[in-house]
Image (cartoon, rainbow, N blue to C red; front, side, top):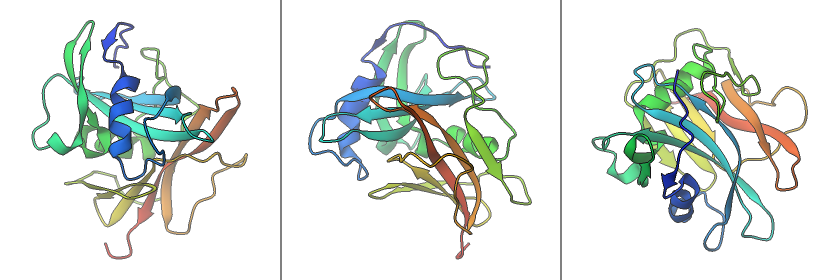
Length: 219
């Protein structure tokens, strides 16, 4: 299990994201975001080398707040071939310099996210070591193991699509919307999902879809 170190970060994660977020096609703001942490969870790297975190951050700079799903990985050295996915670097009070990546382009995060969809791993609490997060839910109705081959990630104005193995795509909802109470409503092509909670600026706790696994008609 990953150990959560409660220590100083320079710059902070939200400071890094404030500079990076406006460069994304799915960012809907008109200027510099004002970010507050609203939720999220972690996944464990089986090798214990890569930190994996899914941050929900709310931008309060506009006329109405917008919540974004921001999957990040933290590495002790640069990831070869992923310069385009680098969010920035920070100094960790215990671990030293960390390279922070948009996790959709990091094969370790993608593999563990697929393992979560299939229930081979559990979501972990964002702030406490060795503590599962039961509020992050998932489903999978496929008939085989979800083992990613070479994964490509494509951003558009609403999210990120990952082309994963065996003719399937994993769609990450970067701009989050609260869902009605009850089981998530999925399309016919959906064969899996991940959902979870976050807080609105007024403290209200809501839930919504984070990622949906689809069969690919062209796959």
